[in-house]
Image 1 (tube, rainbow, N blue to C red):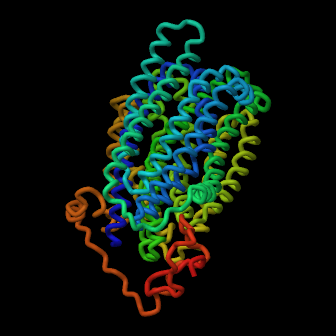
Image 2: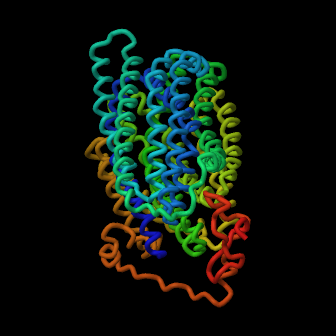
Image 3: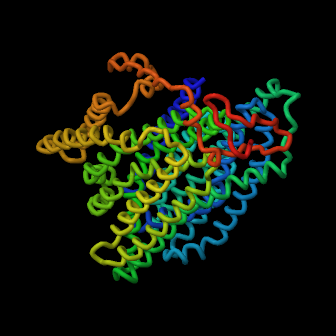
Length: 586
């Protein structure tokens, strides 16, 4: 059972990671042409629209998909398919209403929003992105449902569909405008690219709706007529909102931080550093490009947290303490396995990466490189924030991440306001404040997790071999890159250097025992790979009588059931051997 649960978690994470890889590669085909052929001022409008969109999106959907995933996952694990469908039905119409409301506010309030942001010309870009909010709201309910059933294929496929159509339509429209429009072509090219985003979101929503129709037909014969009575729609809505509100506030905090930070950047560059409106737009676009590259490796961690929540919630509902520790430790280790080398590699190769990706904008690449070097320090912490938030949410501690992010947010806003106003620091102040805020939020989250899982693997011990591996990787790959630059350009030399870095890191991780046998066998062809690496399974530790009870989770911190129905069967008051019983169920 434990192996199956972990296999399910790793399988879901692997599917979403593969999808994310495809989506990010296609995303490069979308963003890189735009960044190379649209001036930073036009890209500033593009990024402003995305910041505003992100805030409205989080307000509409952030916590609800997590709540849907958790409640559907709990109901499905108990064989209550009708209950899972009830959760989806209530969530769908709630998402529909919120998405439509946000879309209308974003469309008709575009002028006022752009004016507040300090960039009035971004209004049309904001209007063009408004329909995306409605479509993604619908997608969020559907993705939450499928993820709750540990079926990551619909989510992965819909993301791929969106990425492909976004490249074809968005880039195609942008290039058409650049070639045929003479007045404000960069501004309108950004609008054309965003129209492609809205169309792609509509196609993704249509695909997910078709998947739900097919799933409903398959479940028709599997539903049990003697299931427990369904929770009322009112109670289901209350459960969704009760769990989603703290998560929404926390998620909105990150988007709100990006929005406020962007507004502070535009205002402080002009009032504090003495830049003109045009120069402020230029630096905002340049920083936006650096952030886009910063997001690339960090995005591969999101599938881990997405797959983690329903699986971990199921383990908690089953009162399997050892499995909870095992899944949480694996999720943190895999997050660090990706995040640490990404931070090191991006910091070392920031300049050639910017020169490669911004090949048609050498001046922009030169200015974006130091910003990317600073931001890269936060890549590992950004990934840890997603994973630690999911762990705390699985325990029903949805409020704690909100508090931790609020503390980090205050730190970020204060640092940004002070540093950006210094002409010698300017836009770099935003990058510095981003790194510091992520560190603060992750440290506070880890402290909270340790109180809930005192027997989980130490995060420091987990990170040390990975840090050592990344250090060796960085030294060897940069030396190889330096030698190559004697004969070829840095833009080309960085590609084989990155490939070598991946190989060196993989070897070092095994040599320094950064991954376990269990982690490797979870991968495709993992048994074969483990044999090639001469890895052997570790012997299970001996547990003395009485120790299992001592290792159970603190009763006050276990997750509440998604369905607190009075008809739920009465649980045993005393914990069984190797199990734990939540206080609210005693």
